[in-house]
Length: 92
View (cartoon, rainbow, N blue to C red):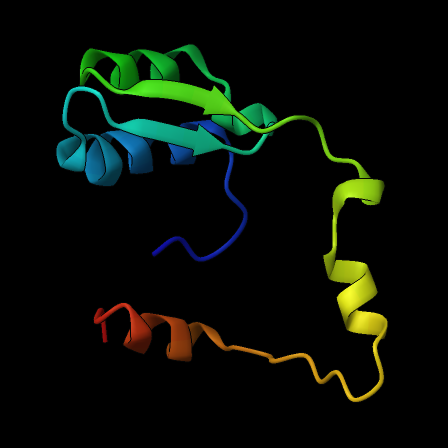
């Protein structure tokens, strides 16, 4: 688990260490249209595993249902801590 923001170098390391070993030829990887996701090393590692890589279209608030969902009466957002995330992933 990374404690802090993710940059291109960190993301590339995560892809190479955790994602690529799980990929099989023909798998499909879909990523957000984020700068750190678009690095050449990330693309090359995924494609070398035989997977196809697609990026989501750029963000559009018109296509994002989350804000509308949060405005409905009775909505209560759930906060999750780093410790809860670590425990849920079995890394505790």
